[in-house]
Image (tube, rainbow, N blue to C red; front, side, top):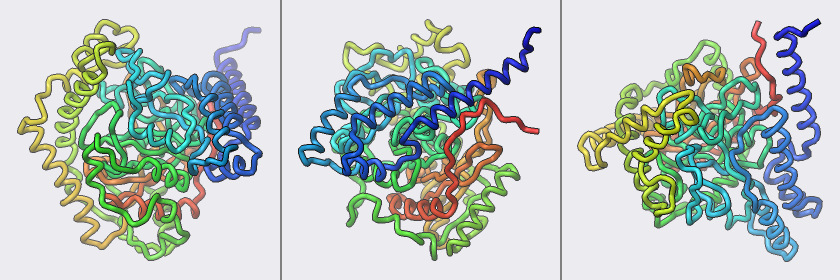
Length: 526
């Protein structure tokens, strides 16, 4: 008797589940925190070499085989030798700080001056090896991390086509959601979010222009921090937007995010916007994580961004109830009318800044680089359509290449208007009017089925207001919907990371909504 396709599909699903269960059972550092790992290393029961080996084995078991998450685009051939050097330092009595010996994965649009490439997921940039580390990478190396490798991403940070699919790149292929494998991980820091959620590293670094840290973090059930633009240097990041780009941490706990952000933050003369950061009296951010931060805090609830499905409204209602139970004073609902006018202005800004930024970054690579301009990238894609444009085109790249310089009046007017709508008439006005400490919204809806025909089709998200303002936002797991994570975002004024981390940590301690992913093949919805 021949087995039918339904039986074979169910059998394949069972095999995936068995492999995933074996991988989870065998991994000794599942859901470990930075503090956990440091305590073991300080006690002499764990070395950086052993920890690095364990994560590399984990990547082999569930990223390249088993459920095949495909979150890691390249491994660092120097990872174990770096771990050995850091172990030698520890034995000699030198511990650089809380990240000493901790393995990390880096998004593929962040430069590393080592044996790995930096390509933004594009085949046009294969072979690109920058001469210097990005500033965030240099700070991490100084802090003693072990760089395990690079993560896959939505190609060109999702700025290639209006029909792009989250987590897909020409170089890396399709990254899959660790909760349900036929679901989208969202973009563009998709590989970073999946890797953290699936315990393939202790933390990861992503980048965001508008939603690229917080959205995949929400969809993958982890914590993601998009800092104020200027808190973390952008030097060495393949640019999308000079006014909105930033790097930030993706972690499984708010405390881990606070530790990592304290290492990433700092001035960089090569990125003048970082010199605008005000002086803070206290170093780092872990001091802000005191219990009870929500008690007495005034929080406004945004319900019209994104426009919520009634089922997401119920999740937000439960989150608001948690805030009230914690003693917060809640203003609900809070409307920000200017938000409705931001989208078209943001588009003008991003297309101009992408053209200028990418041309400048590629030109800086020197004569040996595979591409030196956006026009050359477009030409490469046209001549490699089978590999690069099998699923979607490059209409956004073409549109951006037609833009004028950053002295154009259309660009300058759009930049000024979008900032006024998001800042003066947006977040600042709302917080002043109701004397608020933070705003809260659903980050985005649950993951949708991967669709290479029609592209992404999610419920939208709440990231744009903070992204265009250049203000901070933090997403924290809040609930699950048919097994798929949904997060809520805390955002507020410029440089308010400490306050937001404290509020988010208190919310996290009350909800405990983070669940380890189960690598389900699909969802059976009856």
